[in-house]
Image (cartoon, rainbow, N blue to C red; front, side):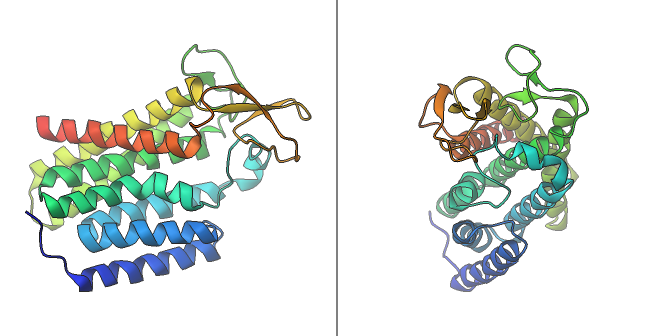
Length: 275
């Protein structure tokens, strides 16, 4: 059964998303296409899910954007390793918020609290992954590859550190707390709030770890023969066309992020059902 759509709420979601997108563009957190992605996902999440869903998106965007600028000078040299910079484009916006938007649509077709838990897990996963990346690269010691434990260069896909894992847990926990507090505000009770907190945190951490695992095994990674550096870019920042080192060419960073959000949603939904 489809719930009756409230056009006023959809319009409100569009306006809120437009404002967030404009602020993100002004602060160089979003590119032009990223603003479009933010409007699409934000309109659906706010307009169909309501403020409790929208709050998860806002917390993710604000916290992850803030961390991308934290000690930015110390991270400048790592930009060549990543497929994209700190300005999110359309692909990144859809990879991070697309699943939550889809879940908001599904929640209108078959209403159930289950979908909010899945949304929280999806947003916790992308938030955890972003926090792990932005803070993990600042670790004093070199990261270890998640598959072998071998020391690798900072910024290497699949490299993990204890600081990064701790940041990942904190990022997931923040989304879980946000969702739990909203359930309390909606008078769903402490049991529901606690279950949501645990589900989102576990789901977010699981999604982040899957992101690292995919990055170490099947994500497309390239090599720049000019700079002698590993990168996620098809064309390196120096202008040299790179050659594929490992992974599948079709599996780029955006798709890896999407898979991580799917894993976060599934794990969170599973934990929610168990509890």
